[in-house]
Image 1 (cartoon, rainbow, N blue to C red):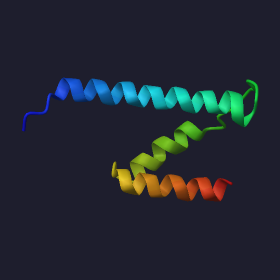
Image 2 (cartoon, rainbow, N blue to C red):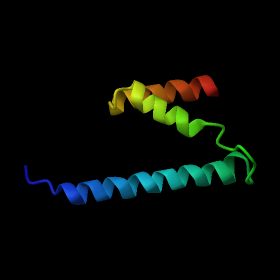
Image 3 (tube, helix red, strand yellow):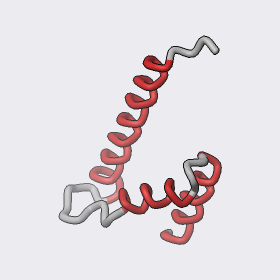
Image 4 (cartoon, rainbow, N blue to C red):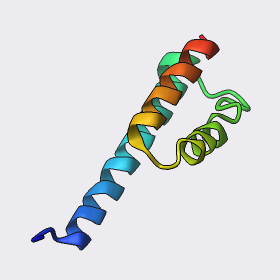
Amino acid sequence: MGVDVARLRFTCVVLGGTLAGLGGTFLSTAYTSMWIENMTAGRGWIAVALVIFAMWDPLRAAFGAYLFGGVNA
């Protein structure tokens, strides 16, 4: 289909790392305004479980993330 798989994979990994870094920045500056012990409180594992239960479907994962965020708020 003319898609360079190596370049697409590299781009997705870089984008994912950037978003993870921005999430960590938000947690340590805006959410708590300093680094505290147990800051993430297991949210990373919840995200992994959400992706698995969504069966790797981006729309289901987005819906689940919004649902979990609303319940958590």
